[in-house]
Length: 323
Image (cartoon, rainbow, N blue to C red; front, side):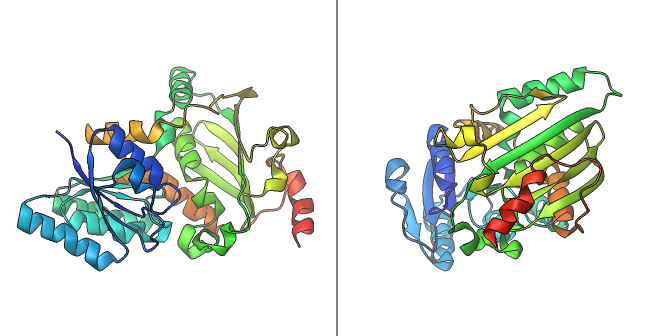
């Protein structure tokens, strides 16, 4: 039997992945909301869904469906800017629905406990999309580490470069208070993956953190991690540029490349399948990575000495060009 969905943030970048997942899990979208009306993507999935550009009318419509027709929501999918997630999760729970929220679930770790309390009061669940935990290569890596020597400390290099144009920092994504910055906005799922596999943080050093790039070193329970994240196209390797690609991701574990460049297209659908079965990742699952990116965002920068990500050798030249 299909589940009833509403979606907030229908004009956003990630919304089509959620629309596709709702469709492919054989469920129904009753209503969608976005302050922008460029939502022709709905025609490809749910042309019959009601659409609103005002939150008040959206909220009223859902209430009318419940009171006049006995139609209730099972889930609200949240694809809005990061700083609005907390409020929209609360709205979903108040409407008697479970929430499915894009990462980062919230921006600050202290937002978690109030949501746990509301979740308990409403007897509903807050789910988040941590799709790397469902990627076959990442699952295989975790199984390998879990079966390996318990006292072994692994050396990990994480590099994620996802080029963005000039629009990026002129949008909400470029406002730290709204997006959380580069480490939060593009790095949260990678940090979640690292903590999931290698355990909690024992030391956190940050070498770079501006509107374009962030980098540092982490001491985890079972790994030393050098990480580098950037939206700057000039950081992309030339071999990748020659293929007309604007994204590069790499995870090296003890010098061995973990191949996970493919297999991403179905991960939102897999996430929805697990959520509907009751196996979604919730508030307590998300909290460690939210705490980590909060700490990175507020850390003082450390000088480059000892261990640091090799990409940091290029960052100063890039900044000079930009200035």
